[in-house]
Length: 111
Image (cartoon, rainbow, N blue to C red; front, side, top):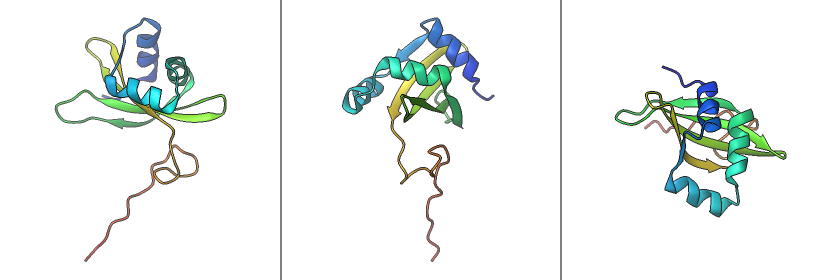
């Protein structure tokens, strides 16, 4: 079942958010505030969804704060209506196309 951005936004507005240690470390390292993440979730768009086996489904949210582009990874617990901030970063052209939303295809070698 796809993750709905409205559900994540509602969780944020209700304080149903847990900040993972990894995300908090990355925020400090990258000089990104928790308020910036909240703005990204509030105005951003889901650009990828992941459904790992054995873990919570998660999504990649694209957003801008003051003309800076960010990606936020959120894991979503549908049962508890809880959002988990996994990591936050500034996308780069090595991994994403110029729109910074489309992931570049990995080069494969054929022997």
